[in-house]
Amino acid sequence: GAGVSQSPSNKVTEKGKDVELRCDPISGHTALYWYRQRLGQGLEFLIYFQGNSAPDKSGLPSDRFSAERTGESVSTLTIQRTQQEDSAVYLCASSLSSVSTYEQYFGPGTRLTVT
Amino acid sequence: GNSVTQMEGPVTLSEEAFLTINCTYTATGYPSLFWYVQYPGEGLQLLLKATKADDKGSNKGFEATYRKETTSFHLEKGSVQVSDSAVYFCALSDSNYQLIWGAGTKLIIKP
Image (cartoon, each protein chain N blue to C red):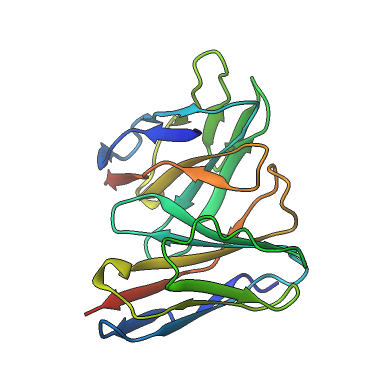
């Protein structure tokens, strides 16, 4: 079946512009995660959605970052007034459940470059 | 807080060499442990996992044993191939849903 998809695959934007990143999780996966991966570093948790529960936004680095998810489907991550330090690969993952032993399936990522 | 430390790369080996990538962790409770792999140009994918002490995860010739006494989950493979060249990430998941990640180790296998 189809895996997690993300769009766009690459985005170059000017400092100060807003960007919107999209994630399509695997059908039936109730849990959805956004991560940021800076060059040469591990993954940094941003936000987590589980079904219709309130999302965990504790990893969002500033109020310029926000994310939405409609039910158990598509999610969008929005970064307002982008800064150069926002340049990174943004990864989305989905999972059947939030139980710790369940595998997270990752999308290919969106590479964001802020000039 | 919880954390994962893995050996810095890049690690460069010749084909058919023995591989060890070290991973140690700090966690409260009884975390699940994972190795993920990121092949060039591809997304992250689960390589193997272990959910309790003394469990051994294995896949594609790779193995890792959950050692609670040494808080380690080292990745090993007896004979590496050029196709194993990738970045390998160690991660843990505790009672919460978050994965805590190591910084990743780039592995380069030369023919």
